[in-house]
Amino acid sequence: MSQTFRHPQILEIARIEGKVTVEGLVARFGVTPQTIRRDLNDLAEAGQLERVHGGAVLPSGTANIVYDERSRLNREAKEAIGRACAAQVPQDASLFLNIGTTTEAVARHLLTHRGLMVMTNNLNVANILIGNPEADIVVAGGSFRRSDGGLVGPLTQASVESYKFDLAVIGCSAIDSDGDLLDFDAQEVGVTQTILRRARKVFLVADHSKFERTAPVRIAPLAQVDRLFTDRALPPALSGIDLDVTLAG
Image (cartoon, rainbow, N blue to C red):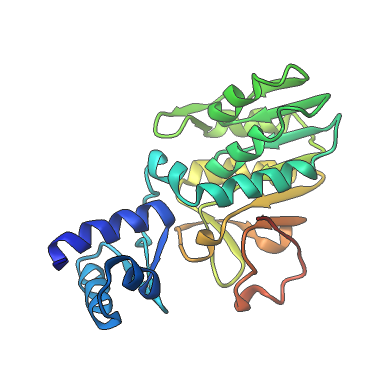
């Protein structure tokens, strides 16, 4: 198989899984590691991937991956994270679920919880939780973001300020090696920062790909989170942070 055929398939794997490895691509295409490394270097030079040790990831930038692709990335890991997080959400609690495909996975595993009051700025979360007759759903006002069903902006922040939550379950677009949570939209970040101030406890849900990406807007330090739900051990650079970590899977 020539590189003309391999390159589009490598990019598709990266979009679905968030990352490709030399070892995995060698097994898939039946070529040498040197051939795969050349392919990855070519794609990196074209700005379509970023090289990392042992493989490549989707390029960092100032714009997020489109929602449909994000919803496919690491789908099994997100469902495992959502299940593990939901198991730690108490009955009869007030909580906030923010924008993100992993918080949507949490919502899918809250359908049998009793006595919940859930506020969200994610219309997808609201639509999922309609399936739980025991959940009271409050949708924050704000500017509607057509790309992913999110609500953001000053009106959303003002809505959140009116509440105090037992628990907030949040996602983010990236976690850098300094331990900062990052995102792409400054308006969304403003809402998330308000959520953090209005919650007694904060759970972060993030699959391993979030440690391999970057984004331009800082939300907060990872140390501000009470518990992280993820699918792999933290990178060595973050191992010194005092944080409860639950590995799902």
